Length: 176
Image (cartoon, rainbow, N blue to C red; front, side, top):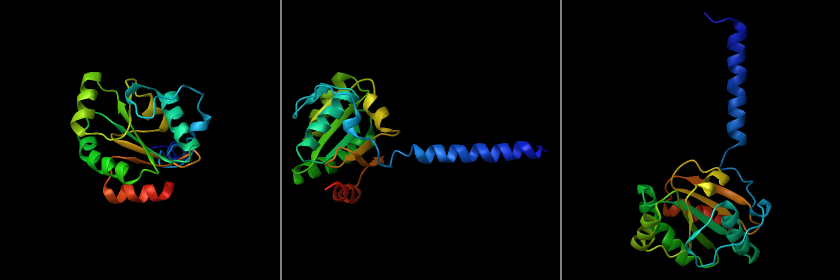
């Protein structure tokens, strides 16, 4: 049988862990691209331009400074759910020219990434993040991860896992 102080300590540790997880919840807003050290943004129409978080944030910052909210999708050639959701993202990008879409190819081999972008017919710009810096910086913990930035450059929502047409449309309404 455990002494009472050990049980009490376990309860306290569980509460601390719970509050830490809530505070670090990636679905909560807070990431602001204007808080990231300035970097040169990749071209607006980039196709696998090398980029870590500072460059991706600069790309997003340029779009939001022009008045467009941004949908950032972290994807990879080795990610089966990414392949399934890309038609939904491609259609949404074409149907919503007032919203900027950008893909972040995550920790992929360049050859695989190039083939993936072509095979999937990705219609929005993509950046190549070999180190996984972007996903780590926004708190992404699953593939795919999609972050939604409002016109102020603040991440308002993040979806870990595959988007559906409905879930994507709900998030787009939130950042419009």
